[in-house]
Length: 115
Length: 116
Image (cartoon, one colour):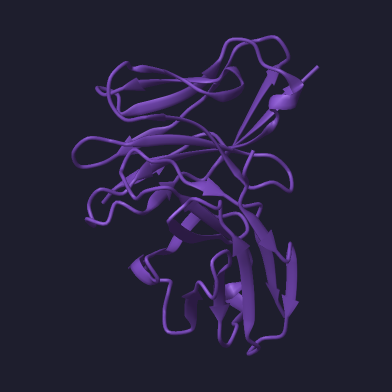
């Protein structure tokens, strides 16, 4: 069964450093998403991406964040200058369409720890 | 604003007994509701969804969910729990207010513990 994969599973970084979280969505999916979950809190939407551009983003997704699909398979989330409060589990997801009824398929997550 | 509430942090049930994990929602218009499960070190796995039609929705691993419009609830159920069902369960609603329809709004999650 096709799965969304994410690397690394755990990333530790120093405050102020740049990090890139990587995701490989399911191959025939066209819509890609990033969510995050701060420990003990809800899963929160960050951004959605389609046709090489952002289609929607949340208030959390400020200028420190960017997303890219550098090739036909990878989808990345970059945080330019990490802050302590960026420590969270980051989930990538993908779906075939953006329709309301369409479920999103999630990866296992990357745990980001900012020291 | 749209929201989802999961009133129980944890649900404990004996193996073989029926289980219910509660979810209530608040949306404008028709709700598009989802249940996901998260096993340790795994991503969120889709279980089932309610879009329209029958109020009882059947999903993966023997789970089902009952949509109740008057009570604005979408409780997850299983007639006979297994120890392997122990996991973290998330209820989610599709955001239909922003126009993009991309975003899922999640509840806080309920940890289900099934003991032998």
